[in-house]
Image (cartoon, rainbow, N blue to C red; front, side, top):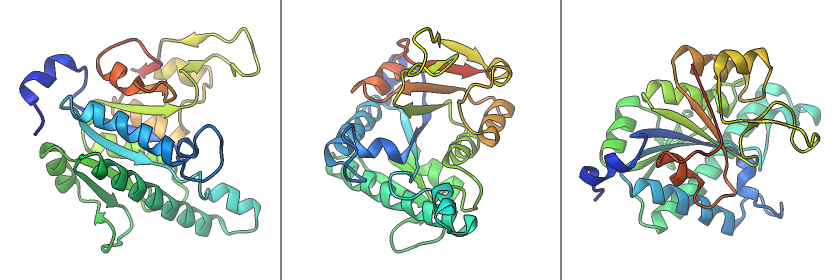
Length: 246
């Protein structure tokens, strides 16, 4: 059981959407699509904040297995490729579920595409009830529609679930005014508004996702997942990554 009486004063947020790209599951060596050690480290971070009483939703991408845009380059129809990418997110979501359950975290997977034998359908009220009962909810299969990214899924689910924040895990420690890998003088932002990020054409999320967050006043925290306690630090109010808000 979560200790909700003591958790609230220690955390900045009550309900979060954690956005993970499929690529983060590859690990640093970039071998198997799902690296076991990397998966365990990510799930340990989710467990850490879950035990603080935070309600956690996870939106996972599928780029480590298949990405729709990549399929188009190979001659696969874009719509078909996007559906293949959605199925890849289901594989990743089941891997997260299995790992979290082995760590003692009750988890439910909800899919935007019906596949009742392996996941629940996405039902908003049921998802909220799961969170209230202390379960982690993993959203897979994107929005169920082609031409929409998992960034957009995260923005949509965060808006629907009335999440306090989207926590976007990346391989960079925040948002910079230019690519820090190419420019030594790149400047990192600790905080920036949606409008300023748009004006400077900063690559935070795709335009659809970004607009949803701005219109529905859902802040985005972009941070580096390589720090093994990054999510807990952010939840506890430590300065980490870059916060984008109105």
